[in-house]
Length: 138
Image 1 (cartoon, rainbow, N blue to C red):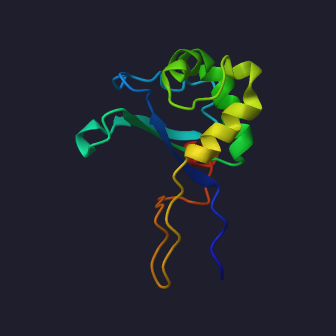
Image 2: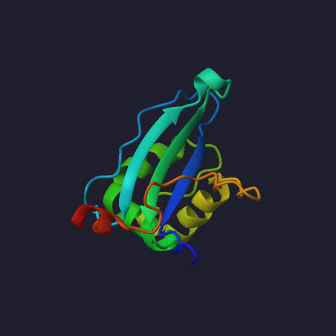
């Protein structure tokens, strides 16, 4: 019996700020899309020698582009404020430049390492085949 295909996916977005900018707090996604967002958090990588870099990490269900559109629809003000401070960031407002935002996120996303033979995948989920709705209904 093969395992069900995972419905959960990670996003690990490296955000490099322009020279002279310091890491700032990002506006976290709001609850307007609790149907597909498992987790979201930000980390400043300054203590790792990347003084101007922020890592935005999320775990979401389903399609990448649908997820990004929901992110834009719920958190565009935070990205509109942040992106002018970002090196090679997409144009703002992101709601008017969705394709550019999608391309920028895809380009700056760190994908998980592929699984080595005989080892579990590098992205671990306790319930990889369960959506947010499935988990909440258990």
